[in-house]
Length: 306
Ligand SMILES: [Zn+2]
Ligand SMILES: [Zn+2]
Image (cartoon, rainbow, N blue to C red):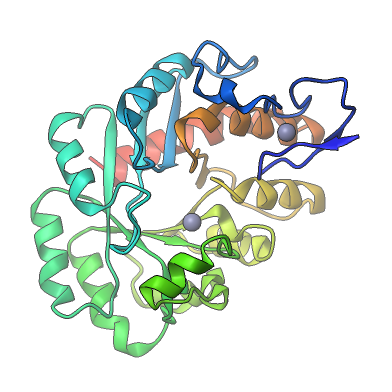
């Protein structure tokens, strides 16, 4: 037996297979650059909206992304920005450039930190540019429910900016990068419950809990999404583990306020989509597929992103 090397899969399978039987990840990784190999996935709706995607800073990434979107009928993708010390993924400036040239295929977000000097003006500038989504990463070291951030949330609410926050254990793969930047990530602040108080104080501010708490805080995220009108969730990346667990425990969850995202390099679309299909079919929950891949995102985008 061998173990699938894809981080969101890790299924064990017999070494007679050349690709993972669950997600299709190849043992020969050169195939990841071959768009013919990354072919269609059976059982998908004809159109998909991706609500959480990143663009790795590698050659021709935009062409690759557009090609794969074409292949899978992905109408539009919401691109996530990253903190300035991160250079391996497209950040604020590059995404703003892309919004000028490809606004029909992408929505963009801008990364900010509520502790930045002059943050109120920064938010007004972003809103004035017509950008609708703010990306926040509390594990960089702040607790979003402290009263000192109330003005920050109030400005987002006033300008109809959506707050998209990482929730769930944060990757521990970048210790060297963290040391270089002098900022160590802290998963403690990625618990969705840190947004409970802001969601109550700012009922007209819309939050998206990225990865719906991952494999640790999926029940907290489910409560937040279900009980707060103004809280939505995405099942991108480690959100697949949250989805599997919520289906397993039969948790109460508002399935009309959650959507899917790839949150990986463009070559990962087929693997993430197959993992989603496998998780739903294992739980006999295939009826949720159109909600997760299209309907909910479309409703959300009409209301908050246009
Ligand atoms: Zn796999
Ligand atoms: Zn995240």
